[in-house]
Image (cartoon, rainbow, N blue to C red):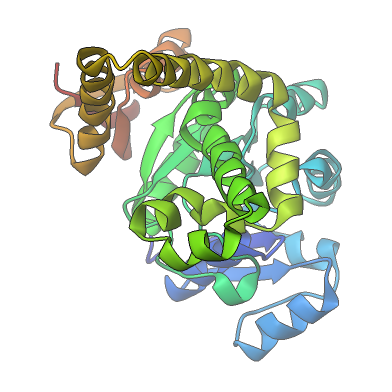
Length: 336
């Protein structure tokens, strides 16, 4: 069992920007033997000045480790995964923190890494970048997607335990392709909309007056437009098809709003906003019911199917415990 107080666990974090840096900080704060590495020398120096164990070479950071978290720009992750896999033992658990999953999951299958690589995506962050913006508490209470796959259940169980116990996050199990479809609407399209609104204000002939009067709705709606452009661009391009499909859904709803406004249909306008408001109100808190499920040790397609179903239903795992002959999960599912 991997516990937050288990000093025997040896971890590494490759890529110590906002997300990877926050992983490094949390593992270090939990008393876990962890080493970080980043390809940027000033970032490595910054980490050392902050008292964080940091290696000069990637292979030095990951050698002999039990688990390695992979960060960095999305386009670099396949090569990083291959390099880290070659530099670590068969028993070393690998995961990533990238914002798209299907492409990297397929790469892992091609390389025969499914038994020890679990695609991951912590749904947390800010519009800031770099180690200076990292926080050890960034993931507390946050959703952290993990993608269980046939042949990789043992690795998933280990990582789910680590994420719930050390990071205090809510594990959302999803199939890799389902993840990409869901985050397209939940995370990626909002970056497009924020960019469009901020960009329109910038081009407006009344730009200065608009910015002077910008209040909460404008600031909230454009917050992620301040994300470093290269990071947003990599995210959108890495999930292009799903983002465009989700954008079509948003455009269709926006057309309904604009159409109602154009013909001065007050009832239709109010109905659309009532529909939108109902969805928005659920963010404040949803009632959940608990469900406990146990599975025997080994690979069980029913376990993978159940886990995928929990995430697809909007649920999450609060606990993953190894029992005498298998595993026991505590799931929280939205109350119908």
